[in-house]
Image 1: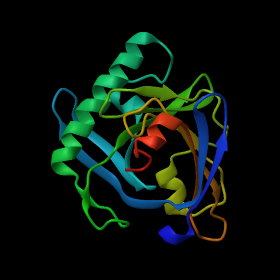
Image 2: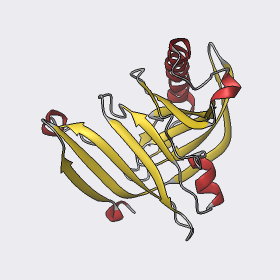
Image 3: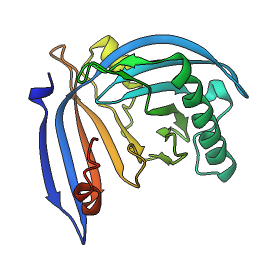
Image 4: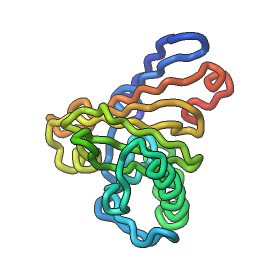
Length: 199
């Protein structure tokens, strides 16, 4: 429930703060979904809700290698925007907190590169971040929520709200059957003053 979510803000340097949101429930909305995307073709993905809706898709099925190579970064930006555009039309969901219709906020490309699990995220603004240092036990969050096995997963989402912020979502404990994550967000204080923190 939303009431169980806790927030802790820690000053960093200058105008930057770290905002840690704890006990955010992870919910697998749907698995094995697919939709046609102009310029790509049929794309398969899982839908996960963790405060926002995310589409998780395997990078290798789209011919994407999760690396720092500029061509691949550009492809992730393009594909992410195309997939989100198609999702905005075909994949509207009901936000359990607001009970209003919502569309996915980001595409998370999952896969491995050089034995390091990496996740890359593309937002409607085209921003990309990937995490080569993710924990070796990292798997798709959708699978974790569905299987309810005690594991840990970490991935990075950049610019969730259209700003240059880093968001780390960590599966902390689901051994008891509950899917709980902790989300850490580094934000600039000017965004807080503008009232852009989570809407």
